Length: 141
Image (spheres, rainbow, N blue to C red):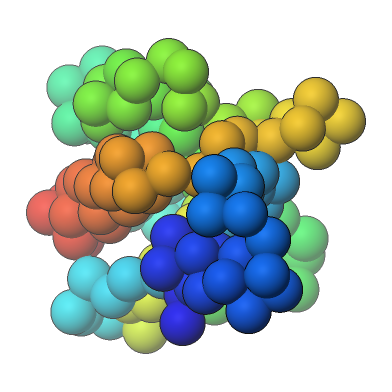
């Protein structure tokens, strides 16, 4: 099991009290936009991201190495634009969009400050915002 249900299963399997609160330091959300994407440096999607009128001004293009010609690296810099409550904002995030249309979104919360309290509500909100990001990418590709 994954997510909140998996966390609750671990609590039960290790005989911890049911009131035990789980904290998450890193989460990974995967999706597929359903079509191939041109992903070379300077591609269409990179030109749409972060520009007024491009529709994705809440995203930014991330850095990539010279040998990463089959992925586009992005990150969300304005979580309010995808409806995520400020209390759930990650400290860092990284989106990899592959040329085959797969989206892998990595999110990191404060590891030294005990992470994000992972509840059913926080999981639903984070997953919904990541899905909005994937849907927006699919809408412009």
